[in-house]
Amino acid sequence: MSNSNEVFVVQGLAGARTLQGSIATSGAKNAVLKILAAAPLFKDSLTIENVPHIEDVDRSCELLLELGLTVDSKKKNTLIVHEAKKPILDMPHELSKRFRASIVFTGALLARYGKVSFPHPGGCVLGGRPIDMFLSSFEKLGATVIHKNEKYEITAPKGGLRGAHIHFRIPTVTGTETVLMAASLARGTTTITNAVLEPEVVALAEFLHDSGVKIEGIGTPTLVIHGTAQKALIAKKAYVTIPDRIEAASFVILAALAAKDVTVTHCNTIHLESVLEHLKMMGVNFTTTKNSVRVFGNEKIVLQAVTLKTHEYPGFPTDAQSPMVVALTQARGESLVWETIFEDRLRYTESLQTMGASITPMNPVQVLVRGGAKLRGKLLESPDLRAGIAFVIAGAIAKGESVIGNIYNIDRGYEYLEKRLQALGLRITREMR
Ligand code: EPZ
Image 1 (cartoon, rainbow, N blue to C red):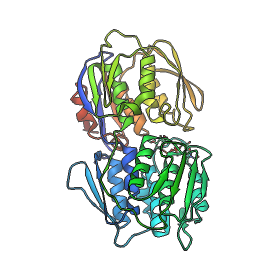
Image 2: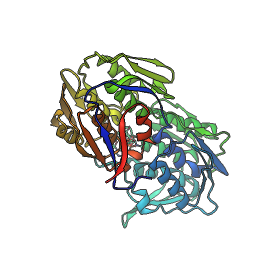
Image 3: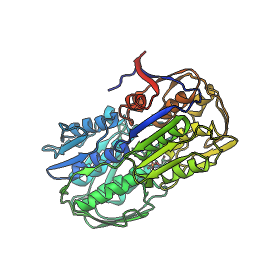
Image 4: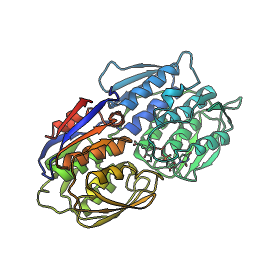
C-alpha cells in the first residue's frame, strides 16, 4: 500500500542501453477489476486467478466487502469472492470516487438485486469521464434513474430488467461491460451495437457465457445477450485473468529505449499487435513468440519518427500513448500524436518538456513531437497511471536523477514495479519524501 509521500527515485541511463533479463507480465488490471465487479451476478462463490497485486484490486475488494460480499485471499494471486448474505446496494461515496471501474459494479448489482445507488465514479482525470451512456442504457433496460444529493439511484422494474436494443454513440469499454452484466440477468434478449472489442471485454463475455448466459457475437461490435430472467450465474471454473497488454507494452517500450537484451514474458502478443507494428516501423529490433517479446540488438539503431493515432482495440491503445510519446522524443524527425479517445490526455507532455523534450501542442488532442531530445532528470508528479509509467520510462533514459511523486497512481496498475525493474538493472528505488 503506497502512501502519499512515497516517491520513485530513478537514476537515468543517459541513453545507454544496458537493461538485461526478463520481466513477466502480470494479470490485466482492466480485466480483473471487471470480473470482481461481476461477482454479484454469481451464486455461492467465484474464484479468480492470476490476480495482480495492485491498489485498484484492493479498492475493488474493499468495495465488495462494503456491498456485503466476502473475499478470501489466502492463496497468492488468487481471490475467492463469496455471495452476499445481506447485500448492501448503496455504494460508498469515498471508495467509489477512487477509481473509474467502480461504475461497472452498478450493472451487476442492479441486475441481481433490482436497485443500486452510487456517486459519479472517480478515476484518472483524462477529461470529463461522463456516464450518460450508462444511465441511458439502464433506462432502456426498464430501470428508473434518479439523480439527487450527488447520487444516482437506479431501480429496476418489478419483474427485473427487460432486454433492449442498445447502441453506443461512442464505443465505451466500461459501458459495454456494465451493460453486458446488467443484460445477463434481464428478462429477454439485449442487443448491443457499437460494442468495443477490447480483449478484457471478450474475456468477461466468454466467462459470463460459460457461467450460464447465452451470448452471441463475442469479439464483434454486435453482442446479443439472452438474459437468464434473474437466475443467478454459476461459476463452473476459475476465471483466469488475461495478461496485462498495457503493462507489457510499457515494458517493451522501455526495453526499446534502454535494453541490451530484455524479454517481456507471460504476455499475449496478439494483444500487442498495434504497439509492435509501430515499434517495427520505428526500426526497433525484436522477436516474438505467442507469449513473449525479446528486445535486443538495438545498440546502434536510430529510432524513426511515426504518426501515432490512438484508436479502440485493435488500434493503438490510448493507455500506451504516453509511454510511446517518450519513445518518440528519442526518434529522428517529427511525429504527430493524435489522442482520439479522451479529450484531455496530453497534459502530461508539459512535464516531459521540463525534462528537455520538444513537444508542441497543435490543439487539445494533438501534439507534434520533435525527436532527438536529450532528456534530463527532473522532479515529476504522476497525474495518472499511464503518465506515471511514462515518467518512469523518461527518467530511465534521462541524464541524472528523476524523483516521481504521487506514485499511488502508478501502484494502481503496476505491481511491485520498482522490484521488477531493479531486476533488469534499472536503478530505481521507492523512498519516503
Ligand atoms: C476504460 O475506461 C479503461 N479503464 C481506461 O483505462 C481506457 O483508457 C479506456 O477504457 C479506453 O480504452 C477501465 O477499464 C477501468 P471509455 P472507460 O468509456 O471505460 C466517453 C487505465 O489507465 N464516454 O471507453 O472509462 C469517454 O469520456 C484507464 O487503465 C462518454 O462520453 O473509457 C471517452 O471519451 C485509463 N459517455 C470515450 O467515451 C459515457 O457514458 C471512451 O471512454 C462513457 C464514456
